[in-house]
Length: 343
Image 1 (cartoon, one colour):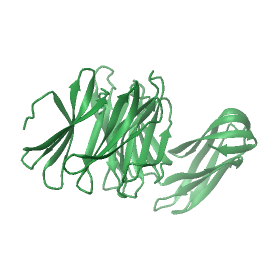
Image 2 (tube, rainbow, N blue to C red):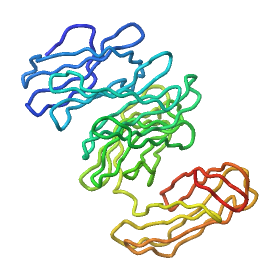
Image 3 (cartoon, rainbow, N blue to C red):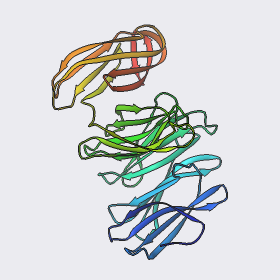
C-alpha cells in the first residue's frame, strides 16, 4: 500500500484486531509534525491523525515512536522543540487515536526521547538523552512512569565521554536492559549495553569495540542479548553491526555504601561457583589517600556474596568506579575527610 502525501513512516506494529498502527512524520521545513495511521488487516486506511508537535530531525534516530497499549488504545512518545528547548512528550490516545492525556518531561536544556515501551505494570519506560543546546555533553536517560504518564523515577547514566540510550525494554526478570553508545557520534565511540534494576539503578554494563553505535537490543531465549547497530570500522561508509552476547554476567555489584570509607557487595547470581574474582575500587577527585585498591576473591558460591571495601581520605565531590571481572558500576559521592556520602 502507498499512502500519499509528504509523509514518512517510521514504526509499525500489528494491533489486536489484526490491523496495523503506523507512526511517522510529516515534513514541515527543518522540522516535522507527528503522523498516526491505523489500517485494517489488508492495509486499508481506517483513520489518520496529525500530531501538531515541533519534532526535530535527529537522524538516524527517530523523533517519534509508539505502540498499542494493553487497553486497546495507543501510546506515542518522542521529542519536541518548544521555545528553543527540547522536551520529551508522551501522549495516550483511545482506540480511535483521540487524545486522553499528554505529559512532557524536561531534565535539561535538551531532553530527547528515543524509545518507548509499555511495562508489565501498565506504565511506560522511555530511553533517551539529556544534553545541552550546544551539544558539548550528553548523558543517557531512562524515565519510568505509571499508567497515567506520571513519573515514578528517572535516572541519567554516565560512562566515558558522552552517552546515549537508544533503546530500552523490560527484561524477563522485570528489570530493564538498554543499549546505546559511549562517545556517541564519534569514530571512537563504543556500543554500550547496560542492565538496571526495577528502580533504574545500574546493575552491570558492557562495551563493545570502537567506532560502533548500538540502536536496538532484545533478550534472547538463552538469556543472552542480540544487538543491532552500525559500525564505522572502514572509516568511510557505515555497515550494519550485529552483536550476540552470552547470558548475563554471573556477578552483580550491589549496595554501594559510604560511611567510613567505601564498601560494596559482589553477588553471584549464576548457577555455578565463581572463582578467582578480580575486583577493584577506584576513586577520582580530590583524594589524598585511597585513590585505588583491589584484590582477588578466591570463590563466591552460587547464590552467595562477598564484601569489598576501601579506606579513603579526601575533600569534595568524587566518582567511585567499582569493577568485578567484566562487571562495573560508577557512583558519585562526597568526601568529608575519611567519611563518604553517596550522592
